[in-house]
Amino acid sequence: MIEIKKFVFNDFQENTFVLFDETKECVIIDPGCSDAEEQAQLADFITAKGLKPVGVYNTHLHIDHMFGNEFVMKTYGLKLRIHPDGVHFLNTAIGFASVFGYDLQSVPGHDGELHEGDVINFGTSALELIETPGHAAGSFCFINRKQNFVVVGDVLFQGGIGRTDLPSGNMDQLMDSIKNKLFSLGDDYVVYSGHGPETSIGEERKYNPFLT
Image 1 (tube, rainbow, N blue to C red):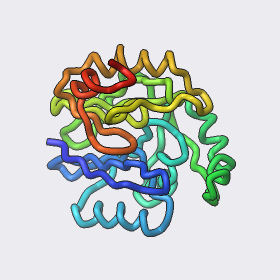
Image 2 (image 1 turned 45 degrees about the horizontal axis):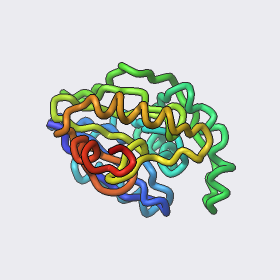
Image 3 (image 1 turned 135 degrees about the horizontal axis):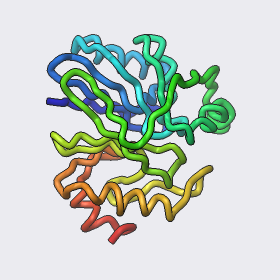
């Protein structure tokens, strides 16, 4: 059974998730740790739980979701695979970070591609990938159909949706991603968003003012 630990990191209050099961293997989704203190919080949890990181993944490659990529990759010897449409975010990350006052010294490259339908395996557990563009090109959501949850990044929030005024944002694509992909999941699916609290597909289908 998958357990999920959430950290809230950096000035953007971004949610970083560590998913692990009884085998102690884990994956890290959207490591947003932006300084030594936040890096230590993440590493100390992994050590205390006796976890073995076997993968690092991003829902999308906006800087607040990938500040900690390099730290995680170097610390645990991991490689990064991304959607090919997200490459330009890696290429522009240092300049974009500087706009917000972050001195991002380097950005690690990627070592392969991910696509819709790919499955991430760790321990006895699995996450299915679906492509969900609209907030950012190359966005993924990570679904676990056994425990009925989905990690959505900035596609969907409690009472909100992802912004579309940043590079590669597109409102029509975002609505398609939500209504035709996420809303195809059951109402009982728990939604782990990139910012803010957890919600459910059913709650957002009924009450989200952007979607009702």
